[in-house]
Amino acid sequence: MPDDIEVPPSFLELDRPLGRLARDYLDALLGGERARASELILASVEDGVPVRDIYIDVFQRTQWEVGRLWELNRITVAEEHYCTAATQLVMSRLYPHVFAGERGRGTLVAAAVSGDLHELGIRMVADFFEMDGWDTFFLGANTPTPGIVELVERREADVLALSATLSAHVPDVAEVIEAMRTAGGERSPIILVGGHPFNAEPELWRELGADGHAPGADGAVSLAEELTAGRKAR
Image (tube, rainbow, N blue to C red; front, top):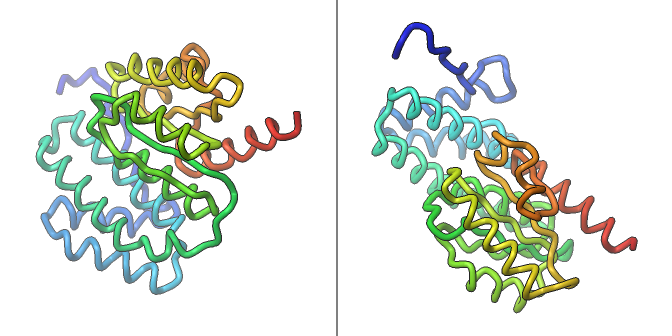
């Protein structure tokens, strides 16, 4: 890398909440020690660390760091995929905690748009809604537009959350929004969008006709509750 190119700082800082755990977790993954990485997380939860904090301060930040290392060519695509797959496996082991709360806050449909093969970020969003008492329908990666619209209407979803990992996927987000508005009219759900293109261009969500954007899973829940409350008050 040329000397005049600024290297972005690490997302893993030891003085941040759970900073040491995040560093140890990522070190285990990059060392190919998936079982050890899982044990670190499960032991922390058993010791009383809230699952929400694990998601935000460990999973989210390590995924950002993995992306940074890949962009800097310090890890391979295969290593990036391994870390992501391992984290999804660890998340699944935490689901007894995620699905333990009461339901009834609302209904969410969450999906990565057609062509987008990255689902971890939007899965975290769905899990945060679930922990907050929402009924969630997570559709995963590469979800065709007709399938998203059909399920939203069948489940009478209050909120639709869409993710786009790359700028190339933004037109697909726009397609889903347009199709949803056409099909649902005034009954369309609150539509939230997220992912790197929207973090890089804070006003992009407005241009696509979404109702809002949140850079993280926790912010998506609070924004959805604010917007749905505002709609009900009309």
